[in-house]
Length: 200
Image (cartoon, rainbow, N blue to C red; front, side, top):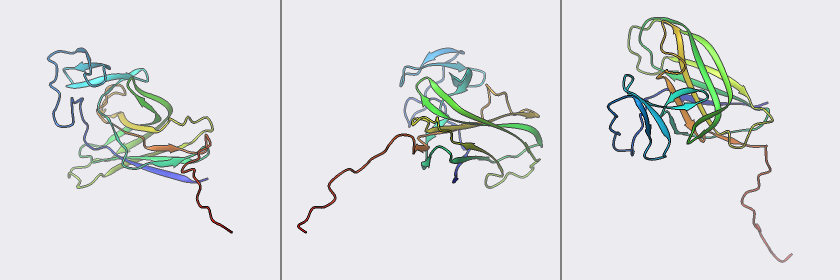
């Protein structure tokens, strides 16, 4: 059984934008708004200064999904390890929850199909690191029931003591679209053609 790996780096987080070059002007008050690009209903929290959408029964900030830098092919029975990382400076934190999900990202949010959780601690760090100094991983076993569209993944961290934020309101959320290629579920024939013809 092959072990596939996919690393995630919790880099910068983007808020909802009208286009890639200009930041959308934030509304003045909290409330529901319409994303002009997709028509999706979004909630703006003026205190947090972020847009949120409903997914999996909780509100999550928009702009956390990114194009995947690579694709990993997985089939039923394979194991997929997802690793998150980030730079950390601050006090020691115990009991942080790492949340990992595989599913389908769409205009109505992320449809979680598989979820895994870990609990880990962060040591005290007093000198800002030059590269990510905290990592955590979770390994999924791909089920036979996997859908061919389960190609998106996301991670988040929350909780701990002292807390870094609640599950529904955490700012530490990052995902990749089209990160997985689902193989071995449906027959796949590509580049069908006559490869040669000759007198013999």
